[in-house]
Length: 428
View 1 (cartoon, rainbow, N blue to C red):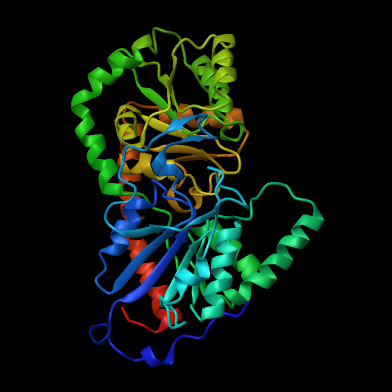
View 2 (cartoon, rainbow, N blue to C red):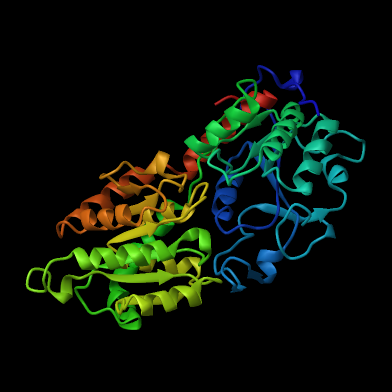
């Protein structure tokens, strides 16, 4: 695969002299985290965005394998930007190497006269046949390809021969990629490792709709008494929050163990009366839920509430309720739920296997980072968070300030820089 050179006929011309740049974005399916970003990109007057989906599984309703429940997102996934669903050749209703696979990707990327229908193609992910077909088709048509994915080097253990195959794969893929769009520090190191310095990189950070989560969290303040009543949390009790899929790798079990140690480390009721002892709320569903509920019973943790799956619009109220958010995951390349919590003004405690910590959390400022799997270190982080009544509040404000600059505006800036580099179409 050979990456096309930037088109000479656009070089040196100002944006005012040009029609909008025609940008295609290929992604497996509508994703709740991406919809606001796509709406923001579509607002750029000199970018004509068309989103090409391989499947409609997330808008028709589906059973999420991680949550283990039927999911119908309660936020608009298709509004505010132009999109198309490619005709399926194979769509199993899940995302994998071989699903979805679409018909006619090459035809969609070219016009009837055989010329390119787009000036650039942005592809999300490389580990699916659809993505590879799109990259090959774009290369054949002379359309430069931008690649974005969340991969990092702290990957699952692989044998030597698998790592050798991966190196060979990227050696073949590299000539077909005009530029990559790192989502953060760990992802940037990944691209440098596999693509070297010859493929340009333009930071396009993994972000969420910060104003949305801040506003929803603020608006929920008037309903906090109602939420506490639903969860059975008395007034005045602080809250530790976990919110994610209840899968083994998310390690809510480590949080339960750390919570038990934390409670045990608290001094006598006369020093820490029950009204001050934190309550643990676990939001989410999945295969691990029965085991976690049994574990809570065995550890005699009476102040743990399993809230089940909650849709995205409900989460800000939980963030507003919480003193701290905890994500103890193993192999979490980013962890966008941390962005959401910080945007709502909630500090975060995360493991070293949560990739966003490199960019979003300084120990003791916006939260804490503990070695993955170290239950005692997690318990110690909880103790530091509740060392004084003011600690969590100060860190929550720090978190909200930090996440303010990790935004869709930064995404658009990075995308525009990448497009200017690979097409010569416009200049910032």
